[in-house]
Structures are given as C-alpha cells and as structure tokens.
Length: 280
Image 1 (cartoon, rainbow, N blue to C red):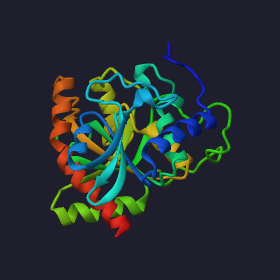
Image 2: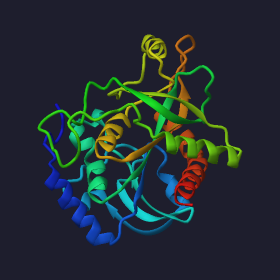
Image 3: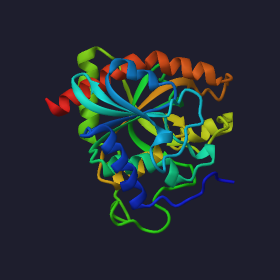
C-alpha cells in the first residue's frame, strides 16, 4: 500500500509556495536537494532562515535517517540558494506525485536551476567509494513516473523531451570547477530503482549490462518533474559503496551515510563554484 495516496494539484503547489514566500520573502533562483548523508552541506552556508517541512502546507514528512526535513534559505559561496534537507522516496510508500511535490513548489517559487544530490552504489568498475559522479543521464527502472495521471498544463508539456535531462551547460560548469579545485570527478549514467532492498549480484550484473554506472533509489522522479517544469538540472552522486557482483560485500546504512557525510564538504565546494560560474 502507498501511504497518503493523493493527487497533488497545481493549486496545492501554489498554496505551499505562497506560504514559503510569505515566510522567506524573496526566494532564490537556485535550489539544492540534499540526499542521504548530504544534509551537512548546510554547514558551508550562511543560513538566513529555515522552516520544517511539516509546517509547509501539503508537504510530505521525511521518514528516512539523515533526512532532516527542512527547507533552508541562505548563501553558499556568495550566491543566494535554497536547500531541501531531505527528500521523499517511493519506497517510503509515497506516490510519485508526493515524491516530486517539493519540486512543484520550487517551480511555483520561480526556481530555474536545481541541483539534485544523492548517495549511490557504484557499478562502474573504475569507480571507488567516496567518488563524486556527475550524472550525464539516467535510466528509470522504478516503475513509476510523476507525470502519469491527469494533465496539469500549468506545470509543463504532456510529453517533455528528456534528451538533455541533465543540462550540458551545468555539467560543463561542474567539470571546469572541479578542474579548478583539483577535484577528480566521474561522469556516468544513474539508474533509479524503487528500493528499499539493495541489489542482488544478478541485478548488479544486469544494471552494468544496460549501461548504468551508479544505482540508487531517488533522483529520477525529481529530475523528470524538474525538466517538465522547465528547470535546468545538475545531478551529483556520491558513490558510497561499490556493487561488486563477483565479490559482494554487505552495505550497511550507517556506513553509507558516513561516506556521504565525508564527501559533503567537497560537494558543497563544487556546487558553490558552479553557482558562482553561472552568475559570474
């Protein structure tokens, strides 16, 4: 059973956006969605204000460890930015419209640039735990899509083009900034699964065969909704564990969170540099 199976409407998003705007005043044009273990990137920000998700009308509730469930506004690297500390997942029982409701609220608030971060398992043999991967493309194997259902024409076209789901301009800026920082980064394809069970060795082999470099339980729903809403998306995966089908190692949640947290300062520096390049 999915929890809170409701249809989130355009008016719901407008109502939530009005609440946020009244709380924060002017809202930044860029936002970051901080995934598992990455909420600590807030430490690099100059925070102006924050609100708990539970205070925002219609917002779902974060239930996952390390997801604080707050919307924070402030400055990162001199640029005005909003950060969603925590996301919602299909495996929590939320429908795709709930998973992507925060994206619809950001759209209503005028956000044009969205940075999606996540913790993921590395499928590419050349990767290592702790690597940062720029998402070049994704494969949606969740069995869900946030655009299924009645059309909300205010949100975007019924059949959005996804050939540039992750904006080339943003990826180029990220590569240039990583080079300037002396920070090695990978590029690859992210595959989204529903979860929450981790991959079997057979599934790892299959995902490699279809061209995936990293695997996780998030991001693809939000990317689809953001592109549908006309946003430019940058995707960044922290490789928290390696998926080794021929020598599988148990992956504990605490260890995954620890690796993600250790990468948060590098991720913050990279994102700050990208935002500065876009607004420089």
